[in-house]
Image (cartoon, rainbow, N blue to C red; front, side):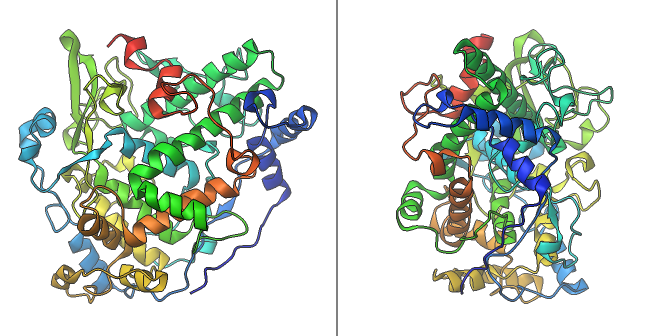
Length: 514
């Protein structure tokens, strides 16, 4: 079936917003010649811009996998309940440290040796950069086209930059408007915070947990260091030039480091060589099929992490569950939730990305089991602040919100051999041959790729939308300078990875001496 094509809807505010998002410095991007007067003018025009308003959409017009009635809602709730079908049943009584050092304690929640623990949080950071659904009701049908996406559907870091220094001055330094405002958490950098601990950032979701907060502030520091470099080179339009440098290196990481871990390099090569088959809009948008499939990242989350190497007393590592109910109301929570400041609440990145010191830890495999703490989320980690608190249940009910087709129907439409999900017959709601897309994508990864990456429908959806968003970005290097290569300091000339970004931002283990 042919995909729907979306018409461009550029209001004056949207055009202004895009102008801000495309502020450019010529010398900084090497091979690309850009009219600097035009770039500076575009940056000035953008000063009054707000957040670009968009809506979600569909790629396919297909029947829903199941009716949105109370029987189906009850069945999906049962499927996603704590201790139920999708719960990995991690033995939390052994504590956060042992669940890392003794992986055999969680036989239903197997490590993925091909992804590092940081892949999860980079994926979450990317999600927050391109999609934010504040309003659609859970489990109640709503047209995607009527649901605003309050993030721009592109990798422009609007979740970090906001509307820029003039529109979002609270995000920037009062003494240097080209740089972000960054505070100290006691030992190292922290997000700016209000007296109640809440973060002063463009997207509050980037303070849901300690790791995503640390990644957000690392990008802020990365930008500030690029500003210093731009000034040292005497380049004009300091903020716009620095921002473009940041974005192009970020785009490189997405295509060359993150996406290969998720969908595999062969599929990326196929899409780049032969084009996108299904996601082919005239203007970028976020399809609800993608929005659901991308929740595969929830299966990659570990029940616990070593946040850093020397955060606890006597320079001991800080281990914590991703979420722990006993941490509710604590000033310095024992878990890794966000929204708090204390001396130990920083990220030691050697646990999450491979600096070559042997300290990196793996993700969990992409499969039909989720780590047990995700079945009892703190309300502060839920955008609406309302139950259900099981992440699996929320994901399953979201299929009814968008009236999504089954995984099997999508596979048939895309010319991919469907897999069996007969195990779902136990729920008695007729989904054994019409699986919810999220579950289907997880089952594909589990059965076809041993949980090491996505496969089939899931891989194709994620691969095409990611590559499409990069290719459709009017200010990205894919459109403007396809032969561009990163030039900031890196371990490998002409390449740039997360360890290079973190090192340039001076949040790496060597700079911190721990």
